[in-house]
Length: 442
Image (cartoon, rainbow, N blue to C red):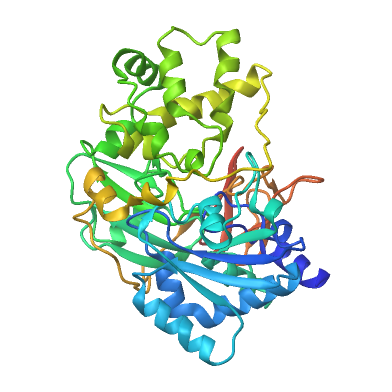
């Protein structure tokens, strides 16, 4: 087991579906329940479904390794009931005697949030500011399991499955080298079809606006999405925080919708977005006022309060994210650590249907994608030194060095949480910068 953990560490495996938590740390724990997250939390992303349909044999190998390492007594694969083809494949494997349960989720948002997933399956509420491990669970993504399997075969994380969606001529899901320039993906998808647009790393709810001219695929990138400049998602993301605060002070209706549909509030956490909006009425956030907003630490950044709940187009999420940066700067720690929590009695009636959400986001016209073999040319890659939870990786190469695909180019910082990074192409190190390495084909 120790050898497998080391192989996963050496392979540079991180969570491929979220923040990028190093897998060798996540799997070095003893648990009751291993949960595979195949729920594809956001609209317009098809990676998990496609991997279950095309690569489940390899995914299952990673699942067996993960279950063995964690000593899990129960294994559950959670996916949406609408993924009929994937369910058929899983049930076919089960008939062969493979030991896992299939949990079918409704098509609601955020079904793929790990705390939501834990509650749906186990009816246990993860403590405030806690992680699933605290209730005996580990949640792991489908592509992460695929990478775990490959790592135990001696292979490194050099490839990434990515959906290219939205305003492109031919939406598609592909496997590309980590570090591939986003512009290469947009070209492969037939180019952008909108005149004025924004490009995102991620889905419409939690994706971040990027500069597609310089941005490259990370180990955590699941979706490169293009939306029109006047789309509600684009408009909200580009609003400055000062403007968000002033708008909230001026036009909040105190309707409570931001709280009543908040996934963390519905799990019983002490998070009340409407209370924050009311307190903004009183003016600026000075040191004393800041202490009144410490429950911002509980926000999971799902985006419902910003893009679905609010009838006057405000963003509690943006303000919470601002507060999560400011509170520690002012020495205000997170006091929310409650262990015994009961979910809200109305939770089952307040799940947000994805079909309705897509209408609200103006993305309902974009169709699901299919997998295509990537035949584009990648002559240059950019490998970010932070594409995982933890400290930046430390370069072990210098400008001018020749490397091959799979070679280690950045290691885990001594004594820190992090992940190894490997070259995804054969080539020459062109630059070693503060936050990235650049490699070009010789």
